[in-house]
Length: 128
Image (cartoon, rainbow, N blue to C red; front, side, top):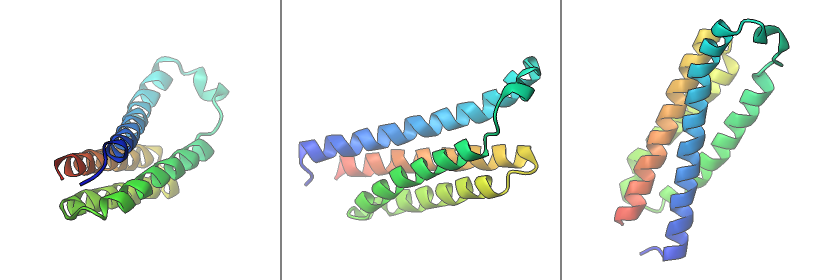
């Protein structure tokens, strides 16, 4: 059985990772709409590729911590698979960013799967 302090840290990690995934999805969905409504922003915004790479690195570090902790729980095997698949798709979005719609689709799917994996892992840890 996991101690209350360790369980709280695990839950906090999963919530942080799910929140970051949600922000990623919101960014992917809102960015095109904002740029359509305010086309003048397209010339004033810096390139996003470095930002995307940094965010995927952060997501990968959080997911890796979650995966290593989830490895202890046999119930979390599916959560690990979902997180790894989500991360792989996120990384595909970093490398295949042209055309831009493909990057948005890959990033949205990857972020969703990563968030679902963290949710599943959190549930598996809480029920053990």
